[in-house]
Amino acid sequence: MKRILVTGGAGFLGSHLCERLIKEGNDVICLDNLFTGNKENVRHLMEHPRFEFVRHDVTQPFYAEADEIYHLACPASPPHYQRNPIQTSKTNVLGSMHMLGLAKRVGARVLLASTSEVYGDPLVHPQPENYRGNVNTTGIRSCYDEGKRMAETLFFDYHRQNGVDIRVIRIFNTYGPRMSQSDGRVVSNFIVQALKNENITIYGSGQQTRSFCYVDDLIEGMVRMMECVGFTGPLNLGNPKEFTMLELAEMIVRLTKSESKVIHLPLPEDDPVQRKPIIDLAKEKLGWKPLVDLEHGLYQTIDYFKTVMGSW
Image 1: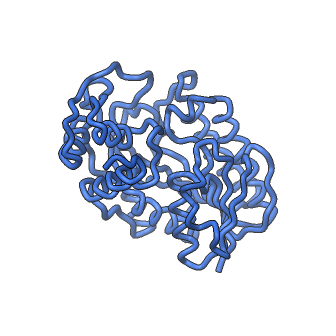
Image 2: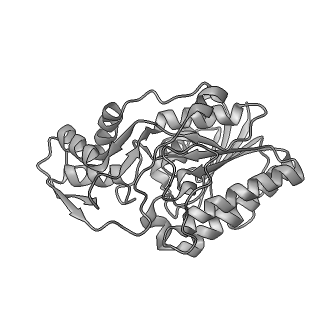
């Protein structure tokens, strides 16, 4: 049994991770300021004797004993991280410094949930870990993109200078139950619009592509990375199967039996045209690859949204 701290633990990914770690017999401290996290995501864990929820902002120091730290705290969807871009930058930089400092003091292994956004609007496709990216330092997404790049820098500097035991993963588009209806991500947007029989809004031509990883697969990769000995990363975690936005919209309309029609709106600033991981390193180092296909994962996600929306 380990004592594990999860920052951002009441969020979409964090809540699934907390659930997994509790099931494995660990003590879990779930740290979240509820800026985008939601207590309902961990409500079912609140009475568990090995689970503790702490409301706290990682931009302020936090002290606890821990064997491992999963650092997930940060708004991850554009509408949320753009709502307060300075706070987003502080979360990435100060939050990472505080978690690294804690890991240094208590001798914990610490994992950073970085992002495929560090690649920006990539000029190399698909993206390997050694691609250094094409990121706008002054755009509306920079607080997140550059914030995560700085977080990675801090992790590797603490590792080199102070011997902190780090792990860095770069998460590509992930979806599943407990996504927020208002997070502005394409899967949740399309599902909510389809269930309401509203127009499905596609930005640009709809030919831009993404790859979609189901949450269970992502959590499996995250846990394997934490347990991997002698490998710091960075490591891509995502599904290498690529879909256009039009293909995704059509699939969701079909699965929901919706009457929604697709409409097109202007493409937002710095929105990537292509995003797809190369996961050869994850296969080699972790023996990991995603197992859930998009249609099956969307069924699970649609069922979740039907429940929380209360209209189906």
